[in-house]
Length: 221
Image 1 (cartoon, helix red, strand yellow):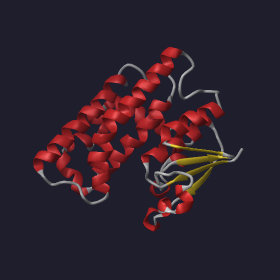
Image 2 (image 1 turned 45 degrees about the horizontal axis):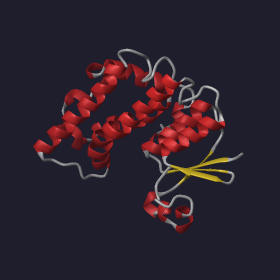
Image 3 (image 1 turned 90 degrees about the vertical axis):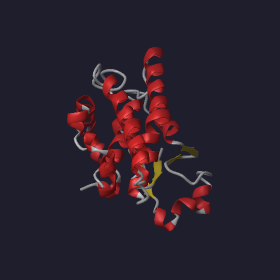
Image 4 (image 1 turned 90 degrees about the horizontal axis):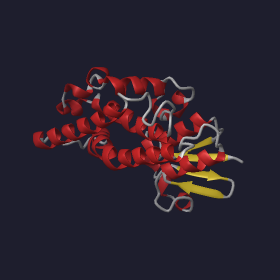
C-alpha cells in the first residue's frame, strides 16, 4: 500500500495534497521533480500524467492526478476525520467552497500575481497592477468574511477547503514580499492588520502537526 507523490517544490497544488496527507496521518514517499531539467515532461512521467503537471499520486496499481481528485482519493483511503464531511450539508458546503476557491481565488492570487512575480514577469502597468490588487483584495475579503463566523472555512474542523486555500494564500503572501510586488499596495504586507480573521486562521493551520513537512521543500528553513 505504498503511496508515492510526484511534486514540484513550490506548486500550491502539490502542497495542498501533502498537507492533506499529513492531516490524515498517511505515510507517503515524495518524488520531487526538477522543472529546470524538464523532469515533468519526460515520456516516463507522461505515462503517469499525460498533462505533464503535478501532483500525481501512485498507489499500487492506481494513478491519480489533479490535486482535488487526489485529496478525495486519500480521504477514502482513511475515512476517519474526513476532509470532505460526514453529512450531506457538510459535504456540499466543502465542495462549494473548494469550487469558489479554485474558480474565484486562484486566478487573482496565483495566476495574476504570485506566478508572474516569482517568474520575474510581473506587470509595471499601473492600471493593470491596480486591477490585480483590487481582485486580490476582493478574494481575501471573501475568506475573511467566512472566517469571521467559524474558525475554519466550513465549521469547527479542518476540511479539504482549508487544505486547498492555505497554499494559495501563502504563495501569494510570499510573492508580495518581492520588490516587484510593491505596486500592489500596503494592504497585503500585514495580513493581521488587513484581514485579522484570515491571519488567525492561517496561524491555526500553520500550527498543525505536519504543516512544516507539507511546505515546499525549498521553502523550509
